[in-house]
Amino acid sequence: MSDLADLTITEAGKRLRSGDITSVDLLDAVTRRASVTESHLHAFLTLDGEGARASAERADADLAKGTDHGPLHGIPVALKDNMCTIGVETTASSKILKGWKPPYDGTAVARLKAAGAVITGKTNLDEFAMGSSTENSAFGETRNPWSTDHVPGGSSGGSAAAAAVGSAFGSFGSDTGGSVRQPAALCGVVGMKPTYGLVSRYGLIAFASSLDQIGPFSRSVEDSVALLGATAGWDRYDATSIKGPVPNFGGSLTTGVQGLKIGIVKELMGEGIDPQVLAATIAVADKLTDAGAHVVEISMPSTEYALSAYYLIAPAECSANLARFDGVRFGHRSTVEGTTEDMMAHSRAEGFGPEVVRRILLGTYALSAGYYDAFYGQAQKVRTLVRNDFTSAYAQVDVLISPTSPTTAFRIGERAVDPIAMYYSDVCTIPSNLSGDPAISVPIGLDDEGLPIGFQIMAPALGEEVMYQVAAAVERLVEFDQRPALATSEVAPV
Ligand code: GLN
Image (cartoon, rainbow, N blue to C red; front, top):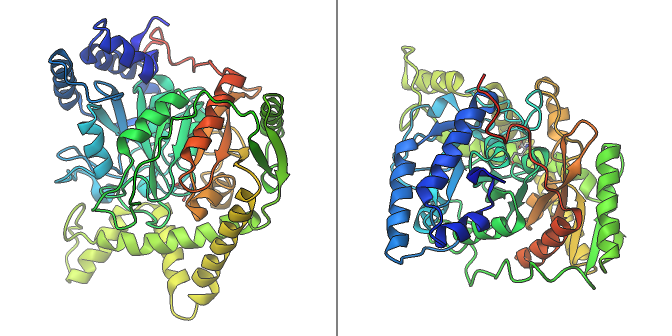
């Protein structure tokens, strides 16, 4: 490919180190790409041209001196706008945080900077990461680079679209119920959710703290390993962060699947899954068998209740987390006159969008005296059953597979009026959030409308190495090398 913006991180890194190109060249390439694609996609809320240029120049100067910070050195990456970046506006796509510039970097952000990555900007999301389409952004939706009539998925739709179209070499999102994997599937890129506790949540604007994890988007499995590697590891600022050495995620990328036991989740291969998605998933399972894996069907009966449990647990936690947005300490403050309580009520009513209000109400209700046991308590019990299903599955197989999303990208507006249809988008991804285990989506082809299909690989806690091993094998077996039409410099700005 002729355009630098289309290189993988690994390829760009090689050329940087050979002295053939500079980090500033890479930044110029993604900036040029964004200048063409942004008017079609709206993947970014903020582009930090000046800050990015300064870090690209620093990366080049460091490399010239022989200081190499590793695989992300000099690589332009984009961050979901719920990741706190010092001095750069961070809104979580909410009016309530419009104009807020965090006084600190989140741990993942600080680690990316220390790894030499060039942060180019902040990407669009569903408000406070609540949604599956990026239509819930207070600042306008993001569109799918494969077809701008379609959603990119969500909530990390901006990051997925940017990685897919080449306005970033890689990007980060947060995955509470599928918000990295589902948009990755819908945009034809690799997206992964790490084991809960592997990447620090410090400086990630909290949605549902027992589920939230930051994870990377990339155009190759190898790049995903590099992006995860730069952010993973214990952090004293996150009490749920895992202590101990960081596993060698990329150690088995070239091993193949010979002799591995792979379970295909029965409950995620039937009703509600689009026939084309189903057929593509089965075709890949067959290729894995041909490559020497033992693929067996595994039943996970509690999966059926996972979605309902999630939509009680996540809103319950969000109702507590979002209590801090009261117009006092940061963000929007109403100018309506009255008592302090009036000010807080009006600030919240004016600042939060309809989906966020719905979640806060649902969560408050589920936690209220008299209903707590019936809703929140019951959901926690289901969470335990889901975990138990995974434990018994992983006693039999090394990894589990399923579609990532029940359908390919849907049309803008199609599910916006029907929250239940929207919530169903996460039926395949939510179980791994409830169990806290890692999972990845890899693109495996296009449907007959030319929209990408994603394939999910789930692994036991801290099983990122075997998860990536299978993901890399799938990548080689399917050789998905198509790019969205918008990822060419010839497309004229609208
Ligand atoms: N779509 C799910 C929700 O709306 C998941 C969101 C996420 O993972 N942040 O809650």
